[in-house]
Length: 448
Image: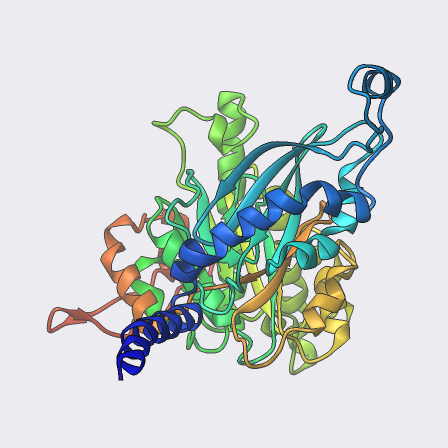
């Protein structure tokens, strides 16, 4: 009986503790990693670092001086030299290790061995980032951070910086319009493309920028952002006039830049600097497709105006965010020319490999296979790349259309009035103290 009571007193707390850890591992992975995973990973890393680097081919021969000292002073065998550990930091999502590479190794060697390092140290993933010449950072994640997206507490900030999603290495994916002025977002239905747009618009709504929407699906996606939009076009005819007005605004800003001798918008004195403009195109294919021959002239003009904006508008502080399901030469004349101006690329799950090639094949061919591997049960997962050739998996936090609309209504006071775009300003009615759908004023077509 005494043995039974002892077993009960000892076994019950142990079972409860094991069950609690298992629950935390599934429901609260950050807590489990901080309490259990991180200490275990740090011990395993410290004990197996040298041998792991050796078997992974990440060591070099000792220098002549080191070999001489080992043989004649220390009276020991000459050991191969691994990268020197400069710093080890733990976090709620993983661990970061800064390494100093010895002569003979390059960052590409460590990148090629990242999968072997992941298995050797028992972590979910290992990403290698070259921080400066001779140094790399191993960004390890202890669990799948994209399964349940939770943005980091410390987010990058800047005059035109918007945190949009979470990278698979635990860092934030941001849209920095000063570095990447124009971007293309592709994705099939139910892939999470609209979720990406909502997070982007919610972030932009907090900044002192003008938002311009082009949603030729009668505004079903963007009209809820009406309180924060300086202009909105919901048909191809309205889009044509709005693009003409944007080009006119761009030319006016170029005159201002010329008067002050500034290279771009941010070189102007703050008191005369116009507000930046972000143009959100929801479904770009609707601007290319025509139903009759008489619409071809309007289509060609819209495409020409978008190409002009893509080529020159960055200096004038006008930035493009173009979204669609497919985007390539099959849309018509000028499509590939416009795509070449879009530096940033985000591709969600697509229906065919050709669409992935359209988005990433010309800048990061390795990322095409990663796009085709996105499962349908993970909406919001995408592959982000840029013209530098780098790419990473990202996932946007879940946000409903009502939440995005509420944020736009909350920051409606930041909506600037641009005289050139005034005919396309959506009129928002507020009844009962809550913002409803945005009834649109009929725009006046731009005159030539």
